[in-house]
Length: 88
Image (tube, rainbow, N blue to C red):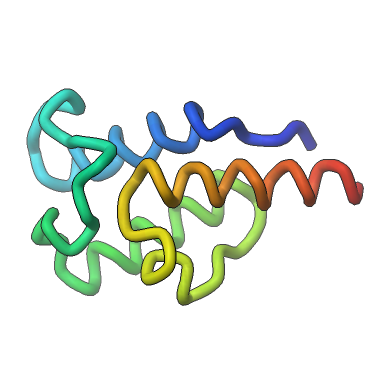
């Protein structure tokens, strides 16, 4: 499986968050903190599940805590994805 780039992960996250909020993607800043998006816990769980399905691997439950913006999380996802691709 090919590694996901930070740009691909960031674009995916922004598109999904924008869709859930009912806004255009350009209204979601990569620097904005996840807790500022007003997603309830159910929406956050659904988003996490969709992300894991898209990636093909699980993201740790603390990932959003340690990577609190889409930009930060996308960089983490790219790093994890690269490691998994190299190991397979």
